[in-house]
Image 1 (cartoon, rainbow, N blue to C red):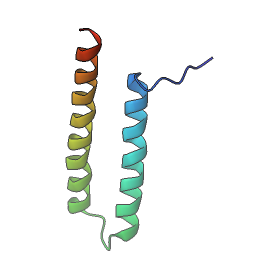
Image 2: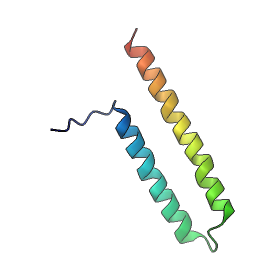
Image 3: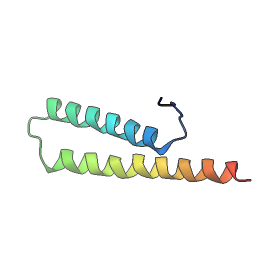
Image 4: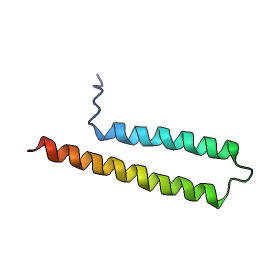
Amino acid sequence: MVKINGKHPFWGILRIAVIFTGLTTFLWMNASNFDKGEITTILELLLVVGGFEAIKHKIQNGKSSG
């Protein structure tokens, strides 16, 4: 049986995948040309969201060990 636990890294990865699937879909649907600008936006936001998730994970692990 799969236990749904918000602290497992899988959920952060799944959340990022869902966000970026939606982002890519909306950018593609609304762009007259899906070009370098949209790809740059996706990559920059991936760095921001991924960095946020990593920092959040590090802070949560630091508090639980203390």
